[in-house]
Image (cartoon, rainbow, N blue to C red):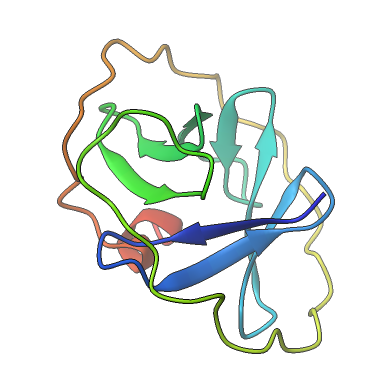
Length: 119
């Protein structure tokens, strides 16, 4: 199953095709989902994936899928650019401890998607 993720302007940013690895449309693997958590390949806990939303560690919305429920106002512009050939997925480092999502905040994060994936 393929899921496309959009930013707050409705621009397609990233996607998943294997229920795990998150790729940018340029083919770069940037993170992966394990349970409800989003991790960088270096093992750092970045946030959460819940109800179609990728959220930062504070519970704010970063990216959304077409199936996203609730959250701040969002819309999609188009189906996105052509996907480039996927780059090799990095080796996954041991995961840091999973954080507890304390709140689900129905507002956009101050982190851009670039900042989110490069924490």
